[in-house]
Structures are given as C-alpha cells and as structure tokens.
Length: 141
Image (cartoon, rainbow, N blue to C red; front, side, top):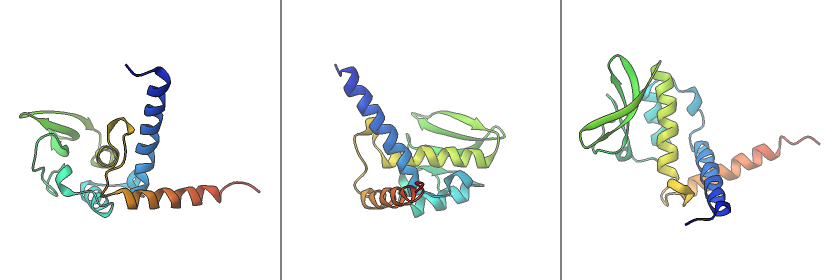
C-alpha cells in the first residue's frame, strides 16, 4: 500500500508532467478542426499509430484514442473489443482541442507520472527549458 504522502507526490508529478507536455503543441487551444489536430500531433513527433482521426488518420488498432463524427456530433473516444465509448462535443474545434490534450498527455507522459516516452524526451526537455526561460522573464523587477 502506498502512503498518502507518496501518493500525493506521484499525483502531483503526473499532473505537472501532463501539463508541461502540452508545451510540445503550442497552439493546441486554438485548433479549428481535426486536420489541424493531426498536423499538430505530427509536428510534436507523436506517431500516427497511437491515435485515430476520421478522414485524416484512421485508427489501425483498438484501444487508441479516436476523434470521430458519430450521430451528428464530434466525439473523442476509444474502441475497445468492438465497443465504442466516448464523449460528444458541441463542435469539431472543441473536440479537436480535447483530443489533442488527451493524446499528448497520454502518449508523452505515462500514467501515474512514471516518466516521459524516450522518443519524445529530448523535445520535451527543450520545450520545458524554453517555457521556464520565458516565464522567468515575466517576473517584475
């Protein structure tokens, strides 16, 4: 059993790593559609095989996040053993933004904050350094 302090530390580390992972995709919060989402993920170095997007990058395996148009709404979800579960969004843009967040954080950072996938680590480290430098320049005085 994990002690409360250790659990809090793991959760905190995982949260920070997932938040910082979004630095790999500047502009994720401005996406307008699924095509821009795929461009952004590819530019971040995230392999096409770890996600699927309708009409752009079809999923090749179960249990990868997908962005699809179902029942008249854009949905972010997952196929698992032939069954789909997901959440529908009011617009393609909103779904694309949520999708990129989900893919980046689940791909770049393993669950529980255990670490960063090795193929992305150099870019991740560089993005963190640049962000810290920029934020450091904002300090008054």
